[in-house]
Image (cartoon, rainbow, N blue to C red; front, side, top):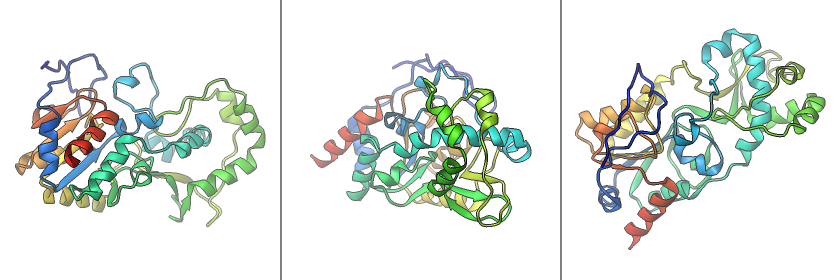
Length: 302
């Protein structure tokens, strides 16, 4: 068992992922915890990397230097907002095409067995529900929904995407000629400035204004308080908290691990790189989720 040699400046993990993880326990220890039932799952981006959606802080993210959109920039900087929508229009099809992987399916299977109660996810891709999970609290919202910041109308992303395609035929044709459009974790892609400038944004179909915003919590934006309270309630009611694929690098997720620890609820963490709650974990594994979760299902069914 190694020790993590990590620094936690502020509330965000320093992006150095070559340190060892302080492992504690094995699959049978995780099985004993989950087998007792009453599990609340808290999942992060590592759940979806096998579905083709990259993460911000995991081992696979070290080579990326993408700066995520902030709430302040999106709301107050029209140029930044326009840039986001141009990039998001190109990235959305890959998010929409993503399918649940064996980790999502394993969580749903454990729910059907009655061992997992609710799922809190930091992901905005909807893959838990697509994989069969129920009672999923989308802590950071969902890319499949769009909201108008003027009239608060809620829109389906597919409908918005179709309208964007209708008014941007030349833009779409130009983008299709790009050799590589690597989607970023928040569903957008890097584009040349001249292409971003050629993109046309649409107005809200309900009020004719806008601006439109994906119904997700951007960096620097607060999660709605009722949603946070709901998550605290789920953690308080749980027999254990199992963190899957999250570094818990930001307080948005870390606070639930801290709440469980304060109340004496055991915490298990399964994620590839170091997490900010490693010292709180009764069980700490670094095995790939696509391997360990199906194995966990088999062990509990044996």
